Length: 96
Image (cartoon, rainbow, N blue to C red):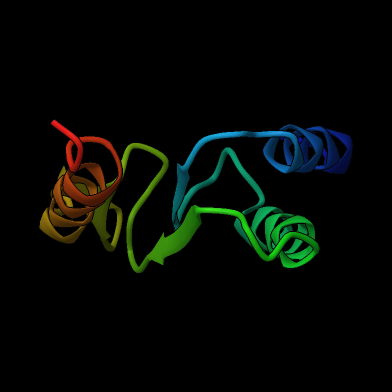
C-alpha cells in the first residue's frame, strides 16, 4: 500500500508541474489511500490558483477503473472512459 510519504512526494510533484494533469481515482482502490491522496492534492493545488489539474473519484471503481459489484470486477467504467475522452479533447487535442 502507498504510504503517506509517497502521497506527500506526489503532492510535491504536482506542485511543480507546468502542464495540465488529470488525477483519477476509483473509490474501491485497495492499492492507494484515495482519501489521503485527494486531501494532499487538494491542499497542494489550493495553494496555486493557476493550476490546471482535474481530480476526480469514481464510485465503485477499483485501481484499474473497473466497476466493482460485490466481489466481482466488471468492465472498465464507461464514465471513466467518457471523462478521459472529454479531458483529452479539452486539454491535449484542443490545439491540434
